[in-house]
Length: 429
Image (cartoon, rainbow, N blue to C red; front, top):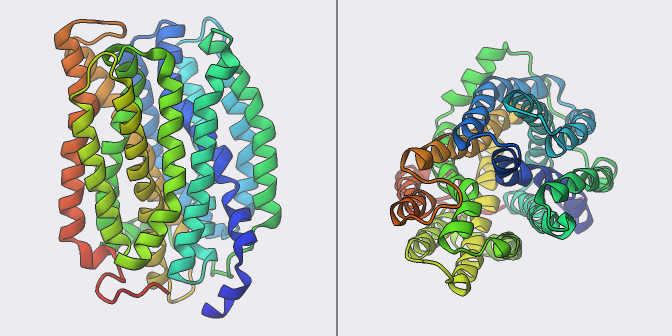
């Protein structure tokens, strides 16, 4: 397949990556702003919001792998993406513009609708990216392009609610929902019309459970998935609790949007650097370096108190750099494993990315479904100034992720020869 590489130029990489922007734009409000919108704005308890999000992800435990299996049977990634985007747009409007009497049922129904549409689009889109690039180095570039656009989408989603709010956060989110539609049309159209098609694959006719079991029986994939899960939960817990940490520990809620922008913008700028580092030392070692950086940064964050906003801004920049490694390198390792596995030309990427997408969302749901009730059980409530409650918030926000990162590092190094097909050889093409 290496003869395809010269035709896969920069414009093709950019065209493919464009859809990452609106998909990430949709994901950030779902996991960062929605808990606060429904807890503060509509009066639901943190425990209720957390349990609703956890329940939806339990549903994803069934739906995401099934979507991946279905994607492989069709092997028409572009059409699946196209079918999901209108549903995603409508769901986002309903989720971010809830009626005044919206309760847990409304939240659960709209999060489910958005999640299913997001899953269909994301699984097909990621599988398309894994299949379209013919070399390991190009797979890193394709993933980096997608994640760079995604991070700029996250930056927009982080910054715009405050700019659009006019002093009312719920109004800013409602306006954000309408703005999402033209962004989705523009970027989605670029990818669907201009991105190159993946090489032909044989549509799989394997029974659903056999196909999904076969994916998990592949030892390199299942081990990489376990590392990805441990590391992902570590990254998701701060995402679910950052607004509370900024408001109550730092006592600077007005700077929350700026901190998010610094974090995601730094991650976007770091992606070319991580791609270059991975070419020199390998993807696995580069990912390990990113994890070590994240641990150092979150230990520092656990020491902060009220008013230490300059230090926290630097923490956001450094943790954003570490996030760049988490975003660019694991999917590229997965694409390398797929390239080694698909020697018979059959499409397996959908099933693999179905499990991958499930774990991605399960990480976020576990963070919300476990961290938020844990905070409530430890005596923390939004707006508190109790020393014990703030210590509990700091523990959950900063130190629990450190322990999970250490677990991910140990697993990744122990399984290094399995999860990175190029670890010994240093091969990059």
